[in-house]
Amino acid sequence: NAVLEAAAKIGMPAYIQFSEGGACFFAGKGLPNDKGKLQASILGACAGAHYVRNVAPAYGIPVLVHSDHCAKKLLPWFDGMLEADEVFFKENGEPLFSSHMLDLSEEPHEENVGICKTYFERMAPMGLILEMEIGITGGAEDGVDNTGIAKDKLYSTPEDTQLVWDTLSPISPMFTIAA
Image 1 (cartoon, helix red, strand yellow):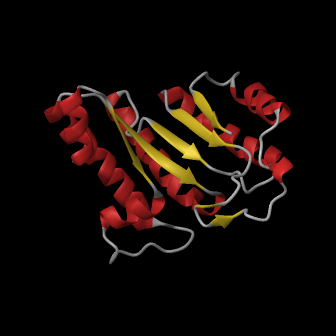
Image 2: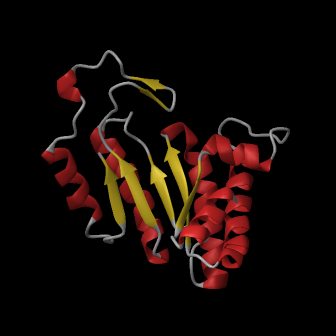
């Protein structure tokens, strides 16, 4: 609510994002969230998206709803949100979320891009934005520690970015690359 209130005060759109852990917390830490199912995380993200969609008009500002940093082990969470997007789209002509991020940067680049392509083909008909991550970070982020990585591995290459463009742009222009 603080983000919505602040955005309204300065007359700016807001961007509300849910992480898997934050979504689980939103639903309630006492709910089951079994590995491979992530049912509380799915419920929390979807409930949060519905909450934002219902409350945002009272603030009089546009609000984007985003899921953030979905690693391969969290794909059941992504699947659940995407199913909710499809149901919402059938009923309302737009997806529940505005965008989703797949962070498969721990995976081999070709696998990362291939998985993103599969999901993006499902997202594109609904006008969903895909944010996908390539490359690695030079420290610790989201439980991944790359502090010992060689400096030349810390940067995405033009070839990495070109593969993403060549693979995703024929599907839709509605994607971004976190590199």
